[in-house]
Amino acid sequence: MRYRKKHKSSGNLRKGSKDLFTVKWENNRVVMIDQTKLPGKLVYVRYNKYEDVAKAIERLIVRGAPAIGVAAAFGMSLAAISSRAKTPNSLLKDLKIAYNRLRSTRPTAVNLVWALDQIMKQATSKSDVQDIKNSIILTSLNMATDDITINKKLGKNGAQMISNDEVILTHCNAGSLATVTYGTALGVLRAANEMGKNIRVIATETRPVMQGSRLTAFELDHYGIDFSLIPDTAVGHLMSKGTISRVIVGADRILKTGHVYNKIGTYQIAALAKRHDIPFYVAAPISTFDLTSSVDDVVIEERNKNELMRMGNKLLAPKGIKILNPAFDVTPPELIAGIITEKCVLMPPYEKSIAKNISYG
Ligand code: MRU
Image (tube, rainbow, N blue to C red; front, side, top):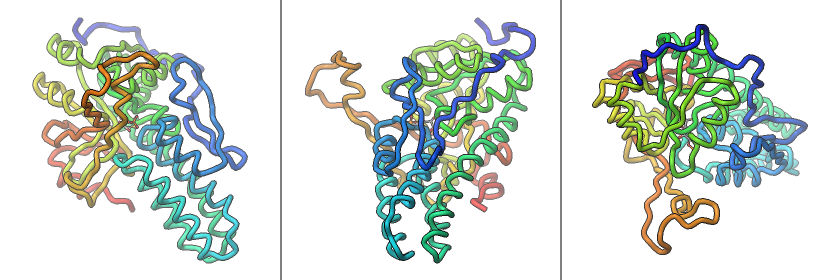
């Protein structure tokens, strides 16, 4: 099965598939898809307390770097609404407590901190209680709208590189379900589809939390994009057979050196892609860049051992054994062919292209 195989003539997006809205603001509440229920049930949960949003981020009810950034920003709006503070200073104190709680939920995706900092910047620039509250709500709403516009731009920038009949591998979920609605890596694939290019997607199952089989497969099926699900362990085999023409993944954090933090397993896919001369791309908005940290500063989230130990009630490994469960890894810049952003596609050497093109403006 070579990737040059012929497909249908002009794109394969199922017309009329409704956009999935992962996180939104409705009647002073945060509404989000409960991603732990997918693919079995498409269920929406509604929160009016920031503490519930913090728990939802920790429990992966909402996940994916841009989506948790927007969810946290909406969490700050809930904190602002529920505060009974009568003075700006006491309101800022309440907001700082919510900021710290939301920030503590997950350590690796930088969009979370970026979004929370944007909110606090707005809050501290106002001197009236109602102005602070209004500006927080407005900033979080703008962040959600911008996420869609940015991802559509990023999608187009990336899709221009894709030729007809490509087979593109993606890992984890960097789609609608990881953003407000359009996706980053999957946004590139959606844009290619919308341009009428025939593409086929290979989605890895992404153990141990299965964001590939539970979420990416659900989403690609929902949008009618032609795809096959594979076990994580099949990547090398399919690359050696010439099945895959390109890899595109999302990112949780990108350093000024071009080191990319993404879902565990990304690094080994990038190393295999290099081995087989397959271009490996990363797609991420500018809010995913961390221009100040170095590799040693970034905390890689270590998740609960039960993610490996159990599948529902079924025991998958002997009780009491030692388990390592890092949720992310680092792909070094020399394995990356390009980084697709809403501004441009960054090319190596990244230290130079990032310094020239990326700033928080
Ligand atoms: O643990 P998760 O599901 O939050 O991890 C998500 C990823 O690693 C995604 O690939 C990344 O956030 C990019 S999302 C546009």
